[in-house]
Amino acid sequence: MSDGIAGSVLVFNAGSSSLKYQLVHPESGEVTAEGIAERIGDHGGSITHSQGGLEVTEQIELPDHTAAIRRVMELFADGGIDLAAAGLSAVGHRVVHGGRSFFRPTLITTEVISEIDRISTLAPLHNPANLTGIQAARELLPDVPSVAVFDTAFFHSLPEAAATYAIDRGVAKLHAIRRYGFHGTSHEYVSGKVPGLLGKPAGEVNQIVLHLGNGASASAIAGGAPIDTSMGMTPLEGLVMGTRSGDIDPGAVLHLHRVVKLGADQIDTLLNKNSGLKGLCGDNDFRSVTEKLAAGDASAKLAYDVYIHRLRRYIGAYMIELGRVDAITFTAGVGENATTVRADSLAGLENYGIVIDPDRNAVRSRQPRKISTDDSTVAVFVVPTNEELAIAQQAAEVVAA
Image 1: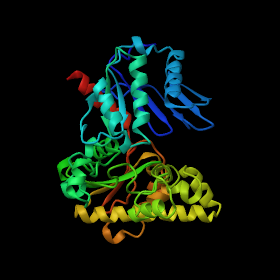
Image 2: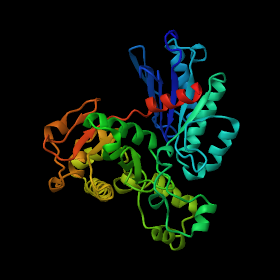
Image 3: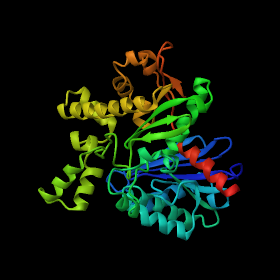
């Protein structure tokens, strides 16, 4: 069954507790196999693997990403695909943080691995998991080149005013402290689809993209180039997320250290793993939060209200920055599926030319779609993100070069 997949790219998208993967052809976009391993490092792990028209879900304890990747490779083999002999062009890896070192897709070498490891302190929830995927792939598929595609790359050229923190310039330069932005692969992919939906050249389109998943970020894009984004030096800044706090007064962090006597690691765990929706209502899965909300849970109501409040704040700020907005687009798990989030985040903005059509908003589809009314001055879209295809295409380009 390996015939017909020569030139395909195996894509690993390793998150903090998950591993998404696809075997995809970068030109046609055809997906031969795909799946997701979830709850890695937690109880109740599972893998859902789709291949050859068949989908298999198994419950399996996944203590770490290495164990997950090894089992995924076995599932490919069980379905008749010998990845080592399939003629893959590359293995493409999502890497969250490129620091100042990486701002384009990069062929992975021992030196590149060392540098990714060095800057892992900037994304402690993700870069170590990304490295695990890289190392496992290089071990299991040593003859297939691995390519890193960095989440920060799309925002590398942010205007200095948007990228710069107002701290001592010497300290910032010495320690590479600046706003990098994240989810860049998704923001680049989704924003690239919007001009076609509008029937306009990319250079004439101003847009806001809202990537809302367990991790969440917003971007303002003018004429195809990002001018601002909500995440900063790390993926912690910005919107309220599943387990991350988003924006918080730095003084609160100092208070936790000086008065509460929490150490740096404890504060890191609090803000990255036990905050956001989880910190407010005990659940980071938006589906569970919605169920609690429907049942009248007060903590879920507060969590939802805080989530929407922060989201509206960023939408408003980016409307001012852009001056003219042609489109607002929702993507990722929450953005693509939570109809109430889309409606509530843009409610009451008719005076700004933003009007959602309730019937269109209620439609569930994996296709890009318009959910605003025909007379809405600002078009509102749902565009399913496809980070795996974007990574495959960029990885193939690097290998071909």
